[in-house]
Image (tube, rainbow over all chains, first blue to last red; front, side, top):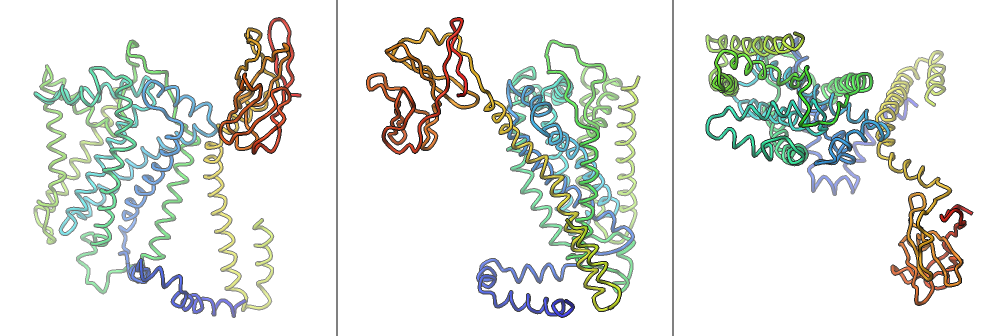
Length: 374
Length: 165
């Protein structure tokens, strides 16, 4: 047995080179180049390496979203039958509740891990030259993911999704001049109807994936091109003291381990806390008392509410909207401001700005939920 | 399945140290393989049942043994009525002599739905030209390898009940 073990690697290596099929593929696909790339790629290993896994976790959850989404697509029907088809998926189709629950939980976990990924990249200054486009494409992916969430939330057409969408779509109406027009166009009328479901469906399953997937590939290509960014604590070390691990198999296996942990968490949540389905949406029924947006919109919801109370007549909401838009633009432009590897006053300011943004997000979100309990 | 194998490996280690590392490798392989299979099953099984759900539904519908047709007695002579028996189409034929025949309407050749031709008094499948006897369902000509399945017809209280023979 021991004999065969020592002989095995040699045999496969020469087999691959001499194997005419491998040669045929290699000449056309450049497999040897890929293999040498995989063999030489390394990932920095240090005390903050833990944060490197969050992009991969987000990617894994996106893959879960794709598969569970396609499965839901098999029975879901947009338009007038939307609620009935989701009811059928949840109660009649075998394990339909689990597939739907997995899709919903994976969506929420994906937004969580994307936020963790973004903030860790932010505080580790991973957006600095030459990774500006990685930062921008990542930010684009987060915005797309949130539109995914918003459009997907309406699709079951139960009471909660109906009113959440109703409130959400009344927000663009505060944009002066074109706001109402835009809102009506997105909604497909002045009220949420089966037209809204159909266009949200088209957005959710065709338009958004068609934009998201190329953006994701670009993001990943940038990560591959520039490699992992080093945090300040590592960058100041002399090169000889920095540790790395091979990407393949070491980092890839750890990544896989994290995916497995994520799968377990997801499976647990989806099975033990299955996603519910409320009553069918009815435009004539009053809104439920605990109406609120998904947690990742709670902060902006609360900011609009606060500004709305400060300034009457839609002006407050407009200000709140401007506040958030300005924050997002500044967030996107940070790589151009904090662009120096030597950590100066700009770097510190950017860190404070990040902490402030995080604080505002957390406080307004908690504030929003506290308001619900009252 | 993996358990006995694992035990075997553990037993093999011990007396001669040379086999030790190899056994550890095999043990790991078996453990990881088993774990992988468990995960694949845990993910695959619900997905399989989810996809197969309509199949189970139509299997249930196919288990139907009896269908009652309310207005079938209004059917004129030398005419046929299509109805659903379980999940498949079937036809009820009212013959000139006032007798009734109920047959499966799934062609035994490639599953097309044949129709009753009143002028020729046969059942004809347009897909490949199969012809069946309208009284018995026997395959007369063309490619069908078998006769159409015949059902039992009973009349009571102005209704017609079709059941499996």
